[in-house]
Length: 540
Image (cartoon, rainbow, N blue to C red; front, side, top):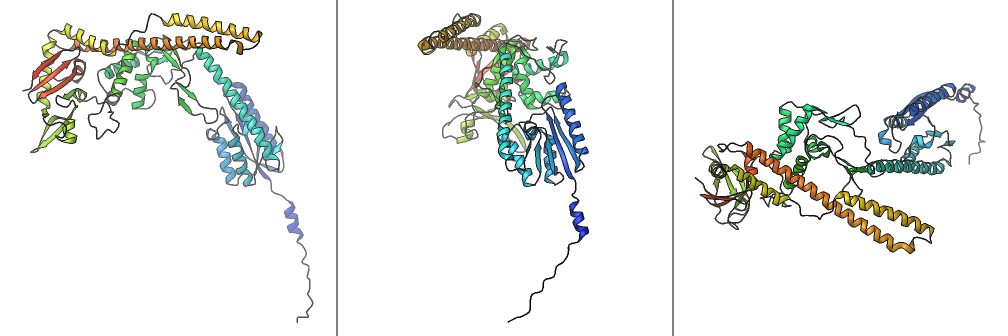
């Protein structure tokens, strides 16, 4: 057994080290400021916040300046849209900031999820956020609960403000009040009153785009000649397919304005959603002087619908049965097999070092002779010469051909009659019924409640609903009629400008003149012109 007595030795403290420990380093303090609009009053507040925090940090001997981070004219509902805020967070994660000063929770974030996420992230790093207005330090035990409540209130306030703003905008739409910006609208500029005004050079380009599309060119082909001719868009050096399509589908080019085509889902995500019936839309006709006629605009929309509804001749390659529009060959959606009714497809044969262009039945190409046993292969040159000969036989009587084509387009596209009511008469009746509804509403409130008059309310509402449906049908019929007139006008212009005899194959002219071409045999076709004119033509 060890009988040695334990010996205790006291090691005294080092006074120099104790003195150094008492000297604490300065805290690196940053401040975050934000204003939500670019108004002059907000900019004054923005500058005042920066000055205030600069003075406050520099005058405290225990603090050192780590930076003033400020976002101006930016929403507080999304941190992703605040670059200075995100830069401050990155510096915090690099341990270059010890303390963050903020005027209030609403300045830090108006999104409860974002607010708590970043506060917790900074808390894990040991970095406090002090909200001066609410007198909250996030490192305190009760801080997070208070921040959750106050952050929710800030988010609710943003949602309330957003709803009020949306209501004001939609009310202005109902009354037809609009401020149209033309900075990015090709073909237009603003006059001294802020109204859209056509620019002559750009307007001529827009008319060419509309005319080219109606003559069968695809959006890609239109983009091609725009770039080739050095015609620059408003933004960038080259045109995009979407910018050309937007010109063709934008109602502003015919002088109208359609409001609320899109809407924002909520003030937090701010996701833009296309309005396909969730909310009402408001059409202001004749808002400004258009570049193209309304008939031309509607004709283009009808052409979009026609191209989008095409069926694919290749059933194996197109699972949906639909096909994309091809503008290169007029026969792609016109040449049909006389035996099985399937469209023909253009093929290139390579034999003995040479190429030969032929058209073959799609059913024969996909399935052999299983469904179509005797369809002939047609050489492209001979086929085109036969079709031109058939059209030329009618070009001598061009007046009859133009009239027949016009009748065919009108009978194929014209809407049915919708009655004798006009939109103006319906609007007048709707105003009367709305006034009657409001009077009944007030009378019910003063005389015992709404349930006693429920049947009357229902009857008026149903009557107003029926009238709105009738108005929608009438407007749809009117727009369809404009589309018909536009298609007829384009066809007449093309045929009237054509020479009495076609000597060269013209894809645009064939599109307007021929409806279908049926292959009867390897030496005979049936050319069906618009208007019901059918011509049997020998193929040599």
